Length: 145
Image (cartoon, rainbow, N blue to C red; front, side, top):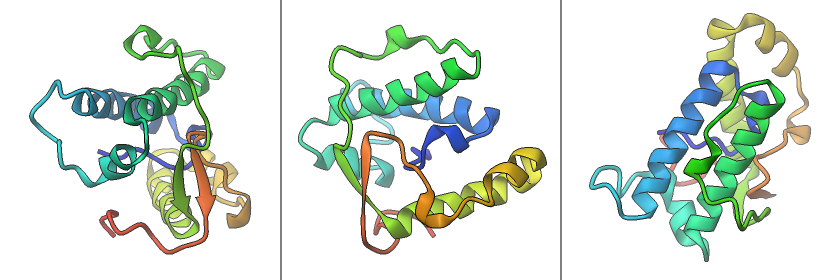
């Protein structure tokens, strides 16, 4: 499960579809509707924020908005978009940089054109999913490096 901190705008089609699917699974876990993945490290930050369900629904909302910009129609009836908040969960600069480089390694193989266009971004200008806000720090302790 990879719930990207970086903005969904950077993801290729495969990544965008995967983060939607995995985000919906994360939502089920946070709702207590599945037995698997309950202790997945990527969920720690959602669980530790004050409103985990609002956070995951907001996360998915911004993924769906990116999909809509690209002409895809994700089934947004699967999320509760009645309360969408931004800047709910901190993410470290180290985590953002790690994820951006991780995605670039994937794009180099999966989508060379997107790699060429996206992976020249200056690290200090990398945007995150609006549910997150950036703080100084190393790669997150839950990340599998």
